[in-house]
Image 1 (cartoon, rainbow, N blue to C red):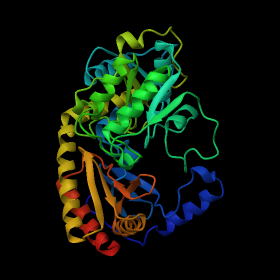
Image 2: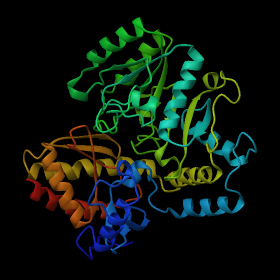
Image 3: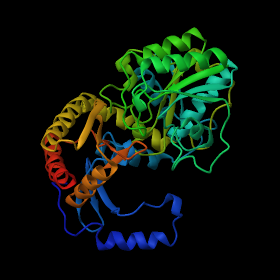
Image 4: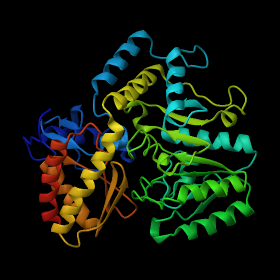
Length: 423
């Protein structure tokens, strides 16, 4: 789509008119929070709004677009699949592509897995917990401070942050036990081990669920030995390990699963977001001995594993391979850390930390106001960004992995000027 091109102030007149129209019919809890532009089309890492302004998109559909907007391979697969049939419910009239994608995911997640498909990341989390409880006969789930696992009732019970996600929506599912996440709010590995040991020794815990790198919690990377320590504790107490890779999976962290970097094998892995380039699809991949314990029809749903989304999912894996996007994620991560380090050196005191696995890089600013100022300046200059963490001080990068080095350079020209305005 070219380069950043701003025809109007933002949001432009057409976007403002659409926001006003939406305010009359769209429920307030689901509406944009203000100042947004309305997309007309997207290609790769680019978004063009209804006023003709062209932006680099560092939000990536909230992490759903590792292969970018409207990837030609994905678009072609969706068009072909939708021309054949839109839906049957796999449990009633099955179709070949469901098993093909399941086999491909098994191969990407260590082998010896079986796979069940669902619609959303939260559904994958809920079903992983159901599997763990059904297999072990235990009710308890160990989870972590800083965690985000979704917005359904059980997923919210596992999610840590109260506002805006949980306040007023209880009571939540019981038997949820939260322990420190090393690196979050100053917690150490010893803090985690002490708290987790106490929970596992005193409660009937079916599974521990963990993000290998916190997402919404602020892009916190735990010590390298953390997952191995958690695995040992789980094994010692007959507890299953679930890794939530809904945001960190599909290459964003520089390996197919972020957990691959610890060489720890989880019993169950949840996948979503980029699995089908934004179409509603998620998955639980688990050891065959675990996945096959439950009886037929105990898991499922009307729309789960929709054939059009499955077709998109197969195309995403092809694009990851053909364009070597997982290696690209590692390169992007290096470029991000280098670029922000230069900005931090030029504006002393503005940035307090730069961290992350692969392209899943978080940049922590000295204050929420400083980051808000930088984001507003970047927005007006043509780069769309988003935050993480309860305090809103972490800039998180969710750009498509198809972004080029020259496009990254263009973004950092904007960020450098925006940092000057925020200092």
